Image 1: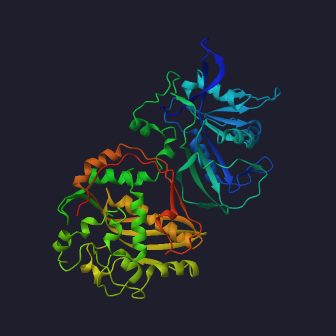
Image 2: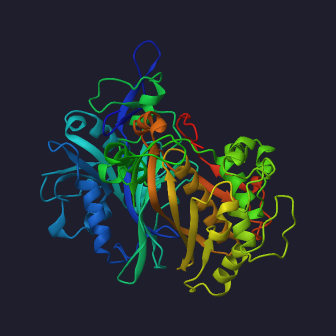
Length: 516
């Protein structure tokens, strides 16, 4: 697929054989700033002054990957007239103004065309010479244009400045259809002129009945394209500055850096690693069940095995326990690992069958109590690292220390991980602590904020290099949406069915064996 696309929609014309001929139209992306209740204007103007938002708008709509091309911006007559005279037409872009007024006059025709409707504009841009000279098409307002175009089949993406501060508006856009669009990227919130906002891009993830054409107008995209090729090209219509901001690239780029520049080291498992200091499918059901197992305080790997979760089998085996000197330990008994430290820190560990109720310090409940009653506390800490118990553990904790932070009604988490298996462990750990943060936020009536992952010895096992090189060829997809049962308000009441992951569409599984 080319940098931008066109779609084919029947126009009612026949080719003589009774077949309706398609009329090519350009697809487009929308750029808008809106409040939480979808307000976009007041008295024909923007009711806020946000220089960073104007810069974002300019960067998105002006930048092209081909220096020989430009982008087009489609707007209604009122939006055109709201642009200060000295700035219109918007420079470096083809300005397409929609109006049905025959008396509408533009002083200069340079870089400006007039169309009577959204349909005619998209058809015009799909025809020569514009199909060759225009790289991307952006719809920029106003309210009536957004109502017609925002959730329509031709809209590939929505770039929205989400304004969190309450501001009075008299012009509104429709709500984004979350069954069709999912977030691709969202910036950290910023405050400017006492207004809090962030930049978010939503991409269409539900296909419509239209067919997409390549930019040169010559061929229809074959529906039988190899799926991996389609996945790689699927979201390439996004502006490069947006495409590369997908958060998974932080992980993928780190893998590439470790494979290319990492230090060759030996390790405890004898496998060998490439390491540094300082888009694969994730087993979601395993993430949920293991986290609930941690929360319960259990140290019995057989609890997970009975649910078909085998991620701890290697470290709980008779052979492995004997190899680290725990010859008297029952198979499946992992010792005082994560869950025990979270719920019974300091208690004397005997075995996985003992009842530890009321023993030790319950860090998890303490974290929740502080978040609810003293959210500004700088000691909201959850630690799995207990030096006096390390010798009793089948595996000392890798993700060992988390600090929680409350601000602006959001709960954020920063986790330190001493040993980071980039192939298998880290994606699982990210999902697990993101879920933990969402769970705690849920029971504390907060909104999930950021998850910050601090990586210590960060490595790729030699046996994982080839599978990870395969993964690097796959491009990220939009993140799924997590929904939590609203009736649950106690951290100990959750079960796996309380969590629904909406829109998770991973690439095919890449096999990597765990080093034990």
